[in-house]
Image 1 (spheres, rainbow, N blue to C red):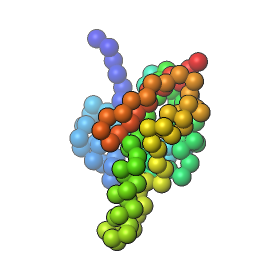
Image 2: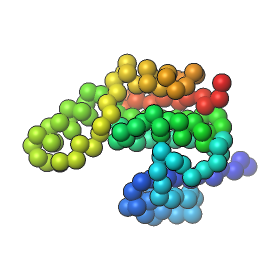
Image 3: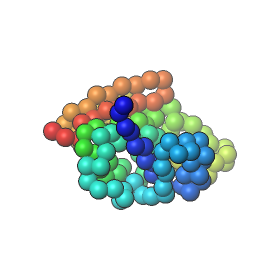
Image 4: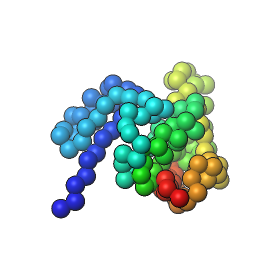
Length: 139
C-alpha cells in the first residue's frame, strides 16, 4: 500500500488550529512563511499552494520556494479574475472590509503567463471562479 505524508504550512495560527482539528493525525500542520519554507530541497513529490498567491506582495519569491521543496510537481490555484477584484473593491468602498484581501489579480491570460515565467512545463485549467496550474518542477 502506498504511503503518503501530508504536511501543511500556514501563516495564520488560527488556520493551523482549524486544520489540526479537521485532519487529526492524518496530517501535520505548522505555522510558517511561504517565502522561507522550513523544508529541505526536493522534500515532496507534490507541493500544493491553494488560494495563497493572491494575498502575497511577492508571489515570485513564494514560487521559488515551492519549486525548491518539490522534487516533481507543484499545483497552484488562484481566483479567476475579474470577479474577486470587483468584490474586494466593493467591500472596501462600502466599508464592509478595510482589508484588501487580494493584492494580486490574474485573468485567464495573465495567470498562465505568470506560471510560464517560472515553469517550463505546466497545464492550466479553469473552473467557475478559480484557475489552477499543475507544473513540473523538474525539466
